[in-house]
Image (cartoon, rainbow, N blue to C red):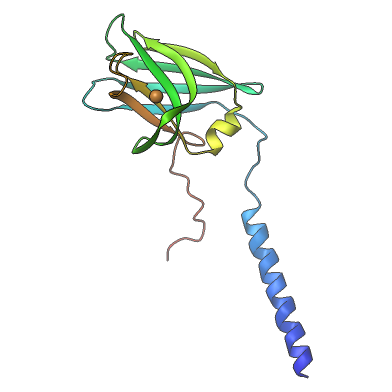
Length: 156
Ligand SMILES: [Cu+2]
């Protein structure tokens, strides 16, 4: 009797566990790689803001930065960093072409899945001499928007 109860309990738990696992499963894997646009917000009152467009190019990703308010003729270093704009790892993860007159195009040796899967951010520095000053930054997130949370559960 007691034994049987235990079996029922265990199988119940297994079933629950499976249901839980399946609940988490339907997250689209790699598959359809679409381009992602990252909004670059100004930092340190730079007056520079814009976008970085990430377009899949096979196992690489084309990153196109477009900034408004960038100083004319100044080369501004840009990188992909680990972390978020609020808390950036100062060591660049991937280098990007310098932003000149607000424009920069780079092919980064990482797939768009890789770039959007991790906690990465794109930032632009004021100049080579003043690289410590960040002028714009944007967090790379899937789909570009952080809105569609998976909270299907509905809060009441
Ligand atoms: Cu940087």
